[in-house]
Length: 271
Ligand SMILES: NC(=O)c1ccc[n+]([C@@H]2O[C@H](COP(=O)([O-])OP(=O)(O)OC[C@H]3O[C@@H](n4cnc5c(N)ncnc54)[C@H](OP(=O)(O)O)[C@@H]3O)[C@@H](O)[C@H]2O)c1
Image: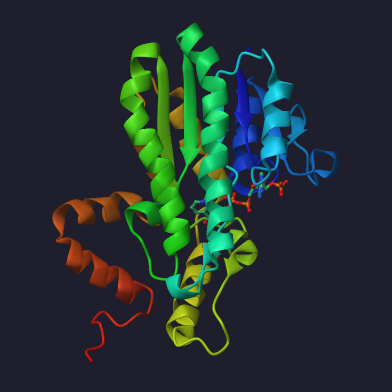
């Protein structure tokens, strides 16, 4: 029986992935900040405590895995954040990088020695299409997702000779309720308030109309089971069309389309 770790397995994409892996007869270790109080537990999932913002929690989780042979690691747990770059508190940015990037990197480092010795393993990082198509007022979040993609795409070539595949799944807008949990930083008198409010309202509307977590989970499973693992799997938000547009259109044209789609002026105001 293969063993998979899914971080953030209590909600949204992580929960759907855990359910699919159980259905495929994996042994699934699912993480939560409070594994004793999982609201809707998936039968068969072994829930364990993990808070990726707390280094002692990461250490305890890794120690708990011990000599377990981990075949698959899904770095899914994450948080959303928005605000004008000027107003994002540096502590909040640091915390976001700890959760969305450094925690995932630390877990990856913990499972790699065993995978390398066994000459097999699969690591799937859940990124975001915002890394490929950055958006105003999402700079910190887009930066974390670009960072985790950077770790994946660069390390692919060092891990491949050892039979280990590492990849990134980039979801677009997904209806998981994540938008309600997004941390927002924009002061009531901020000069950015009007544009910020416009973008976030569009974003929330797109997420409410987004594809389901189950659809993303199917793509994650594809990434886990593909013999020839792709560097990136994009899903949702019309991914095939927008990635094609990215290849065909000049970057500045694409920027204008993105700005217009989110209600921002497509021309920068002149002084
Ligand atoms: N929803 C979207 O539109 C969307 C789009 C693109 C990418 N993504 C990415 O997809 C992933 C999952 O998103 P989702 O929408 O499914 O989110 P979600 O429903 O809010 O679930 C987040 C999961 O992360 C866990 N988590 C939160 N804070 C944590 C922490 N400090 N340490 C460890 N675990 C923590 C939560 O578990 P506990 O509360 O039990 O600890 C929960 O299971 C994230 O990386 C997100 O950035 C989402």
